[in-house]
Image (tube, rainbow, N blue to C red; front, side):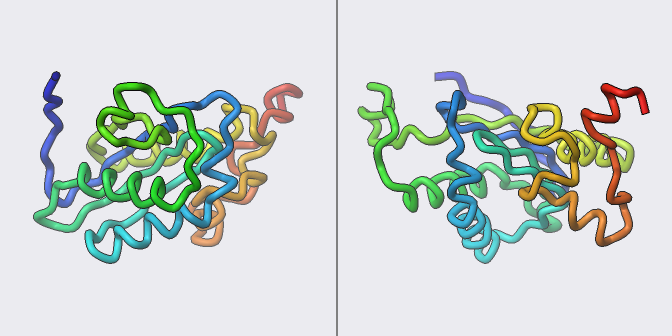
Length: 175
């Protein structure tokens, strides 16, 4: 089996994309967002991290996490978040034979995408990408309309105006 080499940067900020195994027509993450939040909080209590930006979509999520100084172990955090969520969800998903042999659930893709945030501009670009993602995927027409996002916290903190990013209607009309 391929052994992935991941960058090691203690105390760094990371952008992640984490997907459900079955993406088509799957709304599990928003339908059970309470369980996902609990999984995040349970892991954060034992393995601290700061959630800098997040958008939870029906079948995938994007976020920026910052780890404590001296700590570079994001892989354990994701393993615990994914397994904690999986254990709390009723069984019934389709499971491949390879997953069945290993006694795995079939909720999440096994891997995730990570990117080490290099500087403030990189952070800003990734936070913008995260907050625009529900519009990009057609779930809403305006960024402010997606409820499962840190966008609303960014507005409260004065980082974005409430009409940040406009929306599809603005793109279509050229305004």
